[in-house]
Image (tube, rainbow, N blue to C red; front, side):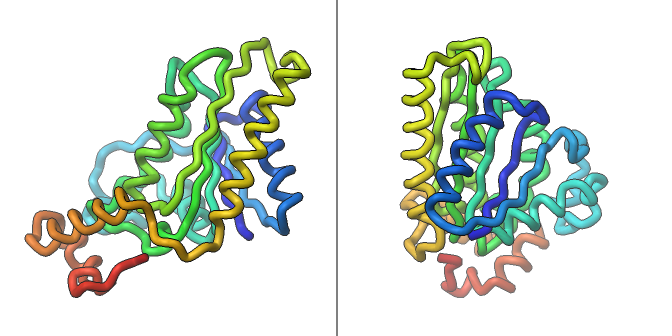
Length: 234
């Protein structure tokens, strides 16, 4: 299995430690190859709203040299992991900056067919609250990509750092991480259909494309995929 991991912070602290628990469990379950990206060190500039990608020229995005290799790694992977610490009750700016560059393959535009066969795990850590909102923000983008199954796990540390978590609580956290990882692993490589929400969204977007409510690039893409003639990516 190939897993692509995106970290929303370059700091190897609580979120990084949580992902190591996930990786250890994945390695117990089977052979896994990882592609890992620390988004701040990958120089993901803020989207400048130039609309180049929406118009069908994502390769000409001013930040394509940094963004496209990560997107290609996600496309090549069997599963995706998004990991972010919670900053002011949401994902980090680094993670949001990357997701802002993915709007062109939202289902309303030109979704990648392979996304409909992927599973994703969203993990966030916080000193206190905010993990639910952070996970939901990331999952919202993944749903619009067409990702088939999305698992979330929020970890509230309630301690100065990972090493300061009381042993009993740490055991509980690690058990939760391993359980979510097991669910994620079992979903990888299966050919089950996406959720009803994803399928319904696809059909709504197909109706929109048939009415030529999108861009010309979107209409041409949907036609090439055969989706306007009844073919489905799942």
